[in-house]
Amino acid sequence: MNLNDCTQRPLAPSAATAPRLRLERLVRRLVAEDGFASPASARRAVAAYERYFFLVTTRQDSPFVPSVQVDRVWQRHMLDTKAYTQDCLRWAGCYVHR
Image 1 (spheres, rainbow, N blue to C red):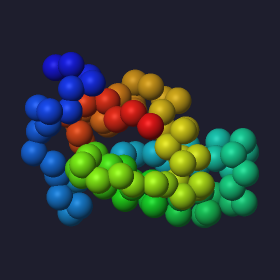
Image 2: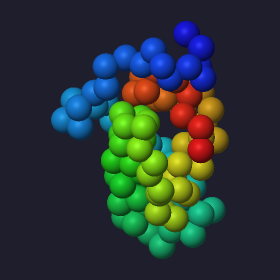
Image 3: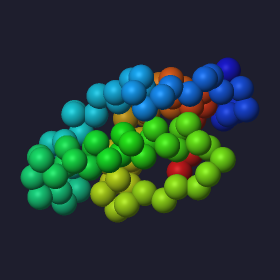
Image 4: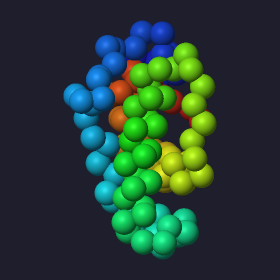
């Protein structure tokens, strides 16, 4: 499958059945390097990012603009290129560009 071809997407998961992104590993770096005040605030941003990622990957015909906090988590997720690519393929069937 071409990573950039979103025309042949798999059926999108529902919010209830969508797999978690498992981004807990990002919390420490979000606090230490990205200005989050605490692990709790970073976890809230990760949860908001998961909701945002679900919308972006299941409704690609609609533009969505992330909050600053969600964008920081997105940047961290993309830096883990292997996991990000796998998550994009699993949720959207293609690589999701910013």
